[in-house]
Every structure is written in C-alpha cells, then in structure tokens.
Image (tube, rainbow, N blue to C red):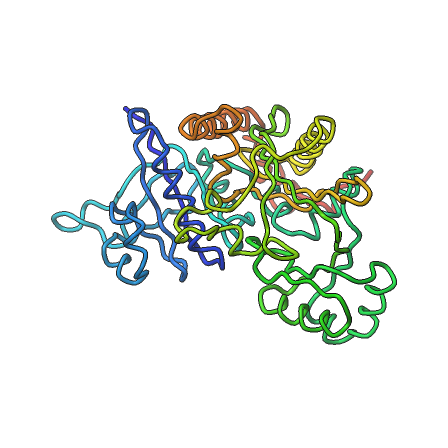
Length: 399
C-alpha cells in the first residue's frame, strides 16, 4: 500500500494564491508510483476542501466556483486520528464519512495562519507526521522581530532595528520617531512583523515617508519593525534542507530586483503570467560571488536554520553590503515559495527527490518524538488519602 500524502495549501493569508501555485508544483513533483496524494485546499474563509478539481490551476480563477467542484472536509483534533472526514457524509444513509486516511502531511502555506505555527499546532495535537518546521520554529521564523532577537543572541549578524506595535505608534509616535532617527537614521525599511512576499514593505528616506510607510504596514499587522536600509546591497538567498542536527545548504541565488527592494511582482510575476511562483522570478543561479563569501553565506544560513530549530526545507535571505563587504541575515522563510526546488535542482537534487526527502524527514521526526516521555502512567488522584490528604498540589509541596 502506498503512503498517502496530504498536501495542505491556500489559507487565510495575503499570500493565498502563491501558496496554491507552490502546492500545485509540489503535487506534480511527487512520485505517484510511491505515493498517493490528497490535496486539501483551505479557502480564504478557512474552510477545507478536497477533490481532483483542486489539481487544475485554471479552476482557481473563480475561488467560489472551485469550492462547489470539491468536497468540504475536516480533521478531528483527536490524538492519533489521521482521517480526513467529509463535512457531509456520503453513501447510503450517510455511512461513508472518511474522505481519506493521511499518513504524512506536507503543509505548503505561505504567510499568516499557516506558515506561522497555527496549522502546525493542529498537526502536533493530532500527532500525525508532517514535513517542515514545528509550531515553535514556525512562529519564531515567521515573526521578524522574534527571529532577529534570537539571531542576535546567537551572534548571527542582523541590521539594526526598532520595533513597536501599532498602538504604541498611535500613542507615542514622536518618541518612536526620535528613537528610529537616533538609532538607525534614514533610509530605513518598514515591514509588518509577520508577513512575507514583500507585502506591506516600504522604504522611507525621511520623516514624512516614515509616517506613510508605517501606516501602510499597520494595515497588515499589529507589530511593525523598522530596519536600517543597506543602500549598496546585494540580496542573496540560500536554501537549507534537513533538521537542526543534520542539514545541507544549496547553491546560492541572487534575485534581480527592479526597485530599491525586491517587490511582490519581482518575486512572483517575473515576466510570466503569475502561475510559476518563485520559479518565475528573475535571478542568477549560482550567484556570482567569491568562493569564501559563498561559503560564509551558506554557513550563516545553516546556523540560522539550526538556532531556530528548523526542519524540512527553508530559505534564508541575506544582505551583502557592497560598500563594507559585511553580510547580514535578513530573514528565514520556513515554507519557501516553490519550496525552493529550483535551488535544489541546481544543487543536484531533483524536485521528486526533494519531496522524498521531506517525507522521510517527517517520518524520522515522528519516530524520534515517539521515543520521548510525554506523560506518566501513574495517576496521582488514585494515590492514598483521596482529595483531602493525598493530593496537595503545588502549594502543598515544601522544600
């Protein structure tokens, strides 16, 4: 019997469509002689659907129509229940309620409510093997503020930054502006803390532009980060594959941008009709860098993956300051666009082989976690004394 892989994608995210493209690429790359595939599309309203109609990208031109072509499903938050259930049971008298039993899940969400640990928490509660980062590493990798704090604590270079909430900005804007100007100075890059795909990001060269860009970022997130902008920058990306104890780095790529920062259009349109994901973006592979700088960027990418306890395939984006030669880690993408398959192909690992590795890593992690103690068989409530004298709780324990 073949392993059944559930590929989950879409979601309540501003990167919804990019997720659909990445998942379609991943599904097409899975070796059907080894695996069965169950696509699970999560709508922009958060409803789950499955069916063959989800495999054709053309059907997504009308998001409401595709929901009618597919069957609505759900999973129960019950430990060990790997079944995908029909929302409306089928068959005579509604006895058929299981749409599929999943063996491994591969999340291909991008952005909030999918890449940020929320979905991973569901999978961990069910205890089903899944590819990619767990709840903690997904959350830390998604939040640019927390991520930079962790990286700086581990001596991984990041640019200077100031962060605040939208409410702090409203209540104490003058002091925050003063702090930004004194600590960083212009120009700066303003970002929502927990979005990807360059959504809500803008450059500010003066105070007026800073007000405008912070207001724009505040439309997407309640936490905002303002970073020093490297003027003479070279953006370099490196993908990492494995787990935090055993991983490898891909060749490097240099994305080609059309403006000061890499835009959503640069990343996903790339002169195409927008159905090729990150594969469509203009880039140099391998990046034209000296060998020593290439190795240092690969080392920093691996260290970023390790200290954030990442798993599966990620992409680390770095910035090279051409004026000083300094390298800074910009961010990590724990579920990268197109799963960075084009970087692994250039490294010598085919897309089908990459999917094989993700499945194997998911099963390996599940096996290892199964060897850990998660509960005790002893029931303290059954100990002598009953509730009056046998169980004192934390307050009854004395050193």
